[in-house]
Length: 338
Image 1 (cartoon, helix red, strand yellow):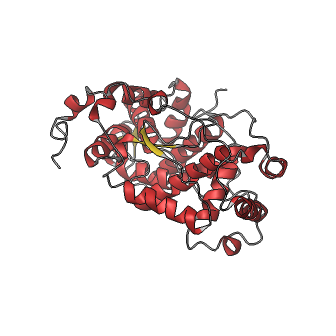
Image 2 (tube, rainbow, N blue to C red):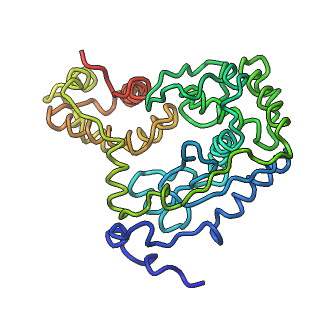
């Protein structure tokens, strides 16, 4: 097969293309065997419904529709490369990560296909699916009432996600979830899912509405517009209430010997700080990188200095930024205003 005509274009040229015009297909791509792996895992559990998969703008299952949309950038290596440049990471890029997400999305598809969320026992176990969902929630990182599957303690965000995460853990091949979650309250949820799936094994779905892929794929936009929208999701108003913290953190006098501009120090250590903060906070790289950019800019504006030889300096900076990122997870803001 000949490569698509856009593969050799520059980033600027590709960004001007409409995503739908790239003519991306799951069939024949590297995603096809991974999707088949999901179907094999479901079949191994006696589950006959294999959710259809389509190319979309992000990972999602439309409300009420038992189908899975997979992000377009995963279909081709050239688009993965662009995604990394624009957002700094590629969600689902490894086979392991891809399968984690697929098992999670398959749970939503099953919930709609069999209308599981309507069952009284489901509601007693996970809560009401009609609960209002918010982008921000207050997870309890050490809670044993929820399984831990995707990042950000996602099971705690909504009853639907609690079920999806529990299902994903239950479906994972080779995972002894009874041992893994022994003495956890979440084990009760896993046992419920195990019984629920056995009750529908071998039975066809009860809800398979007709749909048009184009009504849900959101791909009739240019890549440039797509990424502009995506970046907006990560933008936050930056205010001068960081100044007090920055002045405390970077307190070296401007005339001190062996001093260094704080902005230059942050730039020099940016990569290590980004990796460290994201590893321990589960923060999105794009969001954390933008926060670092804001902090560097503000340090430059305030003309702050540091003692670069201070052995505790990097630790304190990493702790400060991690705190901001965790505040964002809990409140939707990097820091509360006073």
